[in-house]
Image 1 (cartoon, rainbow, N blue to C red):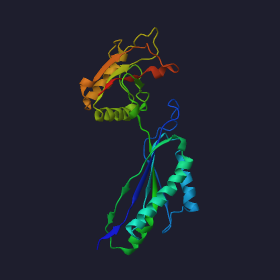
Image 2: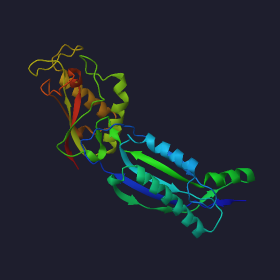
Image 3: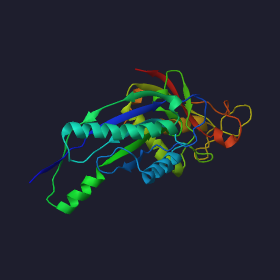
Image 4: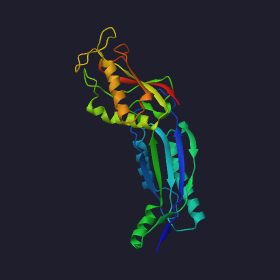
Length: 277
């Protein structure tokens, strides 16, 4: 015998815009973070125990650069459809009020609301069903951080004419090859560029520790063109992984454009966005 679990989902999404775009990102974690708040039967009032747990969760995301927070309200199968809908809304709104109070509400710019209907549950085990009922008297809070690509830029920040330093793509000293620690960031950049086919760009190579803006010598070939071959290395990798070569240019800028600070940070490449179609 099939049993139906009425699951009414209320999604409240808060989009947070940075009050100052120059404010440094303290935490660049890009994984979804979530927390569940459980309720008593027929209640939308949060218990003291669940409230304390929710505040602990909120503390863990204080340094996250938040894109949005979604609040999903659930109820169990008992009661009519309309009753469950109202109860789900009350639970979700109760948690929304708390979340909005403790997470930079002055930066909230949008609230989206959506509802979902019934989810089918198939089980003949009475004890399990009773447990599932209690587990579905809840609200789930999901925090979506803004996603930095290769430790450099947010996808929505890309604009034609802008140049982005790629600080997590680090090169071996005197060589065109990136360090092992940079591999995952290069893969992330590649996946983004493969998926976003309208971005046309130039990879610009740089070197450190030279006088008068000269280029460095490639220890592998002996040629004094290290900035160029570093840019070409990234170019060739992107093409090999599926980025259309017609979208990419590359150039070596030698040691002419220093970042300031530690010279080793000039052992780098940058992404110049030429146009976005």
